[in-house]
Length: 182
Image 1 (cartoon, rainbow, N blue to C red):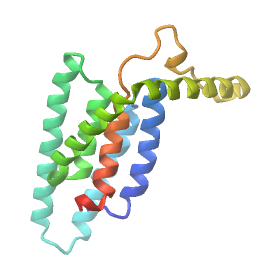
Image 2 (image 1 turned 30 degrees about the vertical axis):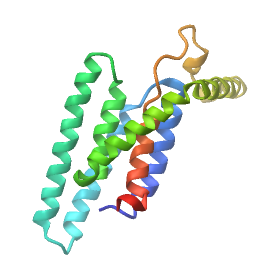
Image 3 (image 1 turned 180 degrees about the vertical axis):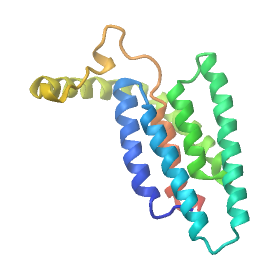
C-alpha cells in the first residue's frame, strides 16, 4: 500500500526502537505517534491518489484498524498482568496498521517467533547491552552537552525483562519487506 515510504520509515523507527528498548527498556510515545500519523497520512494519500475502488481501500483500512484495536485490547490485558510492556503493546498495535489486515496474523506469528529467538539469545543480548551501555557512558562523559542518560544496564536495579521491541520491529520489517509476504 505504501511501498515507497515504508522501507525508510521502518528502518529509521526500527533503529530507534532497537536503541531505546535495548539500552533503556523504553519505547517512546513520540515514536508511536509518528508511526500513527504517518500511517494516517499515507492512508489518506493512497485514498486520494488511488485509481482502484476507494470502497475496497476504506474497507482494508477499517479491517486493519479493527485488527490493531484487537491487538491493543489483548495487549492491554497482558500489560495489566505484567506480561508485556505498555510501549510494546502500543508499538505492536500501531505496526498492525502498517502491515495491513491481511498480514496481521503473519506479523504476530513472526513477532512471537522472533521473541522466542531473542529469549534464547538473552545472555548474548545482555552482553551487548552491557558493552553498549559502557560506550554510551563514555560518550556522555566525553560530550556532556549531549545530556545522555545512563543506560539501565549500569543502574543498581540492572536490566529486567526482554527488550521485546526488537522482536516487534523485526517482525514488522520482515513482513513488510520480505517477498514471502507480498
